[in-house]
View 1 (cartoon, rainbow, N blue to C red):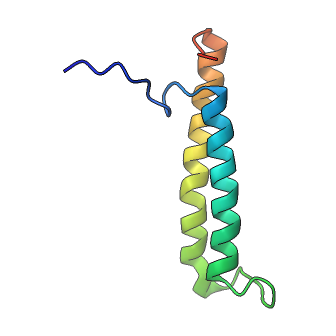
View 2 (cartoon, one colour):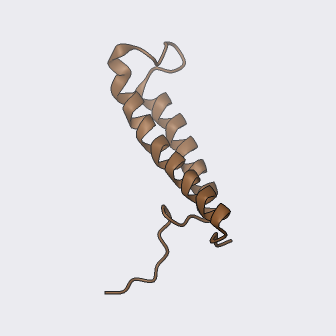
Length: 80
């Protein structure tokens, strides 16, 4: 089976980068505010360690997509 759809993680465009960054930022802010009592206490207590894991996993994906974008840009195969 031959699939011609581009893979947004391996060959991201500027549009993919922008959408991913906005989604990551909004998700991180909303997750931090909703899970922790952000406005009245410190969100970095030991019981909130799982919240940190939920924030770091999408951050890793965002870094991976940026790395692939710049690798493809340097190779000259970036789709605009």
